[in-house]
Image (cartoon, rainbow, N blue to C red):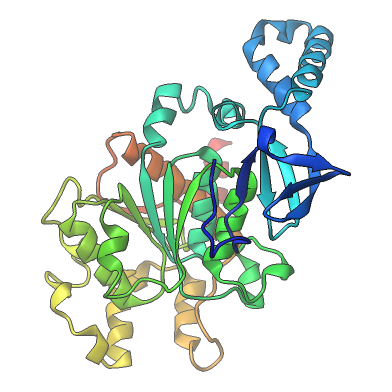
Length: 366
């Protein structure tokens, strides 16, 4: 049971979990925290799924399976079991299975691509994400697969209308901290996952606290000084770092856990970028350093053109939802494999669907 602190009676992003045996239901409302919450009770269908999972041989007789599962679910739903998950921002209480049964059902379609042993291993992992534009899609993908037990997310910004070309959120979330928006979405699909928020963003005073204790860091922020600062801390603590750029499917893997002396940014920023005074660096020099890090000649033509027009025609570089979503999938897959000990070497990877190359391969296949 999660008991909210006294100053977090109606939290911005964290659900309240109340055992059904303790939640008084009256007139279609669950009464908790001194008020009533409208009820959504679909636990019978969840219990029916439990029955189906335990009787896979009945798949050969779908009518019988459906009948027996529904009967089982209806019977179990009458018992005072499960939890009420209260979502203050939705003004709703949803009845769900208790944690172990909930995880078993929600993760059942992962098997055997993720085995039960691997799932248990991942459940003890802690992942950190800095930056929640691209990072939000990564966080949600990791949460869907239950690739972590604890997720630490950081972003100092609030959600703007222009973010909605690539950030999954509704208009009702405009103006909210991006950390809260991401945490809400994760809680709505799985209230048992632990999410820690750093809504002030990462800076010199909290970077050590954020990075220490992580099993993996995913860096998706825009600020060059934070990129550098986070990598310095990750290398010192032997923590691998991933970064997806959402352009040409470019994914950076820096295995500081295996290579404690590995140059930051694959050495593209020079042998000792930690000695660079970024705060005093002129804007054009800072931009030049960033261009070296992202390997400007190998960016897509559209993104290279965009960089040239920032400050004249564009406020910042463009990002597309299709690139962000595909990058999130690749990043989550690599994260899972690293956390499970599979051999993923350091390097820069490109996973793209270039139209000319796709056409070329189609012709070759013919």
